[in-house]
Length: 65
Image 1 (cartoon, helix red, strand yellow):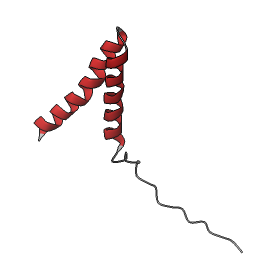
Image 2 (tube, rainbow, N blue to C red):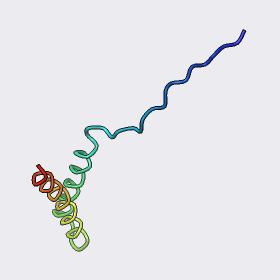
Image 3 (tube, rainbow, N blue to C red):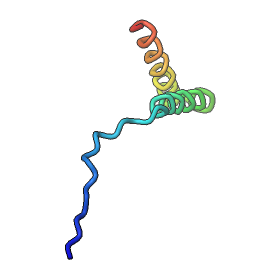
């Protein structure tokens, strides 16, 4: 007696979760705020970058609409 094994159809590439990009942008903003409050030198540079990226993304999305 032979048993047949059925295979699931090939799945499409996994789509990122709805929360992936908002979480990434919030982590960037949080690290930028903490860095701006507690460090100097590279921390100041990181705070500008980390706070500028979410701002730039929101501006780009607002202009795109």
